[in-house]
Image 1 (cartoon, helix red, strand yellow):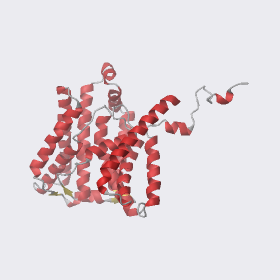
Image 2 (spheres, helix red, strand yellow; image 1 turned 180 degrees about the vertical axis):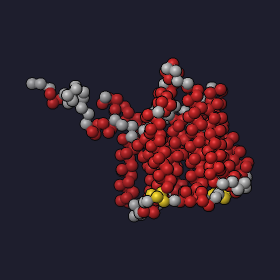
Image 3 (tube, one colour; image 1 turned 30 degrees about the vertical axis):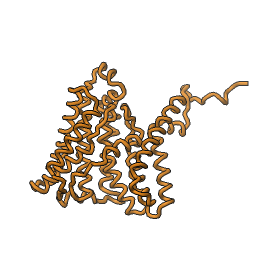
Image 4 (cartoon, rainbow, N blue to C red; image 1 turned 60 degrees about the horizontal axis):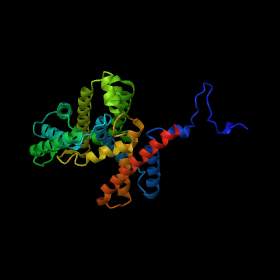
Length: 334
């Protein structure tokens, strides 16, 4: 008797035919997709107003801002680095924007451009110090987080700033059934997908994250990639700060106080390996929504808000553990 039933099916070219379910499981975003579906079903069943139009609108706004916060961490995570001053840069950029609008009476457009440039300068400083001092990004960005936060506090003295009324309309604007911020997030994710998949510099970044030594031997300028990614990281923090202020209607120094946790959480939940070398647009998008849904759902289920940080920490641990288990199982299946 032959063992034809136990042999894997092949195509006419002799390649192994993979089932759609197995193909989906092998994707790094599979855990995030399953999680978002389960959370959607759970919160829909156990809360009355989760699916309301108003709640969906608020979810889309919050998920969009979280997406830009996570993009700040993503741009260094893809090279195996980290940015612990994501929130501090956001705080500094918020204070700068508020001071320009309230004290200098600067128009919205030039203020936005200058604020993003301030974020870029912070990133260049981070990347330069990491390259020249040859210290771990953990040490440099931790130290710079105190510097940036101290400057922001010194300028503002803890006082909030008023922002231009027209700018606040962006954070509260609606396009069809969703928010204007959500449209911006979708555009941002699509740009990142094209950048890492089709552009040479994006592929070079992933190569550095996969193996920096091999990337250097192949002619990639690793130090320049490092500075570029740190600059992009802090510029995304600046954009997140602008959107945060636009949504809240004021600029406060406390902006960014919990961004570091959220940025790591979304990347980990979305299947982004924090040791570098990969990017998945679907997982990244789902990660932002998962974090938003969890915070919103726990509030609607009247879970004590003081335990929220504990739940988020456990969820990050669970997400990383499940992704590690999925990768091991995927290696065996291949």
